[in-house]
Image 1 (cartoon, one colour):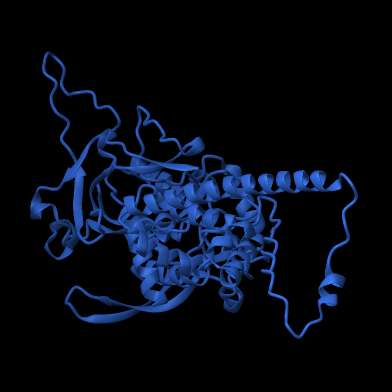
Image 2: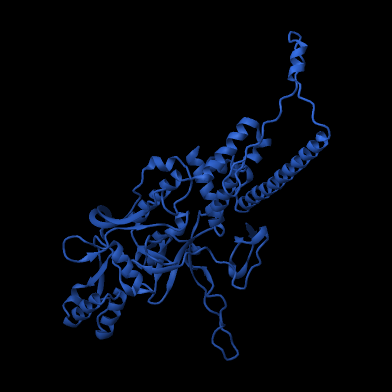
Length: 483
């Protein structure tokens, strides 16, 4: 079970923390940061080539060619050129190409780069094996977690300014690091525990307004995002990332994430269907509009990252997920046929076995005046054998008591789980009535009575343990779609 806990360590707010038996988890010394997915390697969206000035230098060409042949990262090649030619600043420039770059230097374990290329590299006729298209599986259902992005200004060593949204998701702020305070008594600065603190930028009242931002207007602040995913067949417990600065690519991906999520009940994680169909990442040549230095619009051709979902959409709309879905439908059917009071006993157990309640005996009717009395006599049961009646009565009593205790225990667990879900939703800003409508739309009217329905509700709410505003917005958005 998961319990609600609250922590103020280093400015971090409340979150849902796994705990056994529903107990509130004790905050640790390090507190709880926002949910992050560990990354174990980077795939590049393109390449870097020598600038026109750098290409005129034989030494720069030699270092560049040797670095590319050795599989070095472009940052490393650039550093080598800068060390050999101190007067040459920024010797490399990005180049838009139809393939991705996978280099061992971009992975803590270079073997992973080799695995990716062995599995999905292609030679498209020029004798060079490159990565043009590869399958991916996303590890979370909230697209903000698998495609984080921000407006950011970098110095040579760290972020200087970056954008963050408020808790309600309505206001965008510009953040920076606090100045480390002086310690005095012979020491220059205070030792900071838990990392440097962040604060709002002093200019513009801390708001992120690109039209009024000197860094953005000077092209020092730009949109920066990345996709985070696993690659089927590549053995790594950590995910991989694909950075991108393309607004068009990220906007198109968001639309596909939302479309797939609506058809799969909010899910974008895992394989898309029972045939283990993944998403695919590839590139597509498109014309995009841009504004030149004189403010005039123009169109240029670019290779943009494209997210593919090669799956039959009608299969996604069926919303059939094996025994969990069967469990929910069984509870719904019993609710309709027998009323809410008896629906509990129709829920499936942990092995997926559905036990239907036995039909209640029909009330005895008064003898019909037209029916002969002899018919009643013929219908009467045979007398029981001597001494059997007490034994039968005792067995019936024990069986009834056992069934009653089991149903009472099951009902108690069910009530606790449902109450916890309502409390967790309320803690994240979604009242009980709204969450009830949302859950019924997602998993059917019988979701509370079915173990599978409650399990899926728990799996749905847990990823938002540190993003209350995101969960509230998700509920609101999906209810509007279903309205």
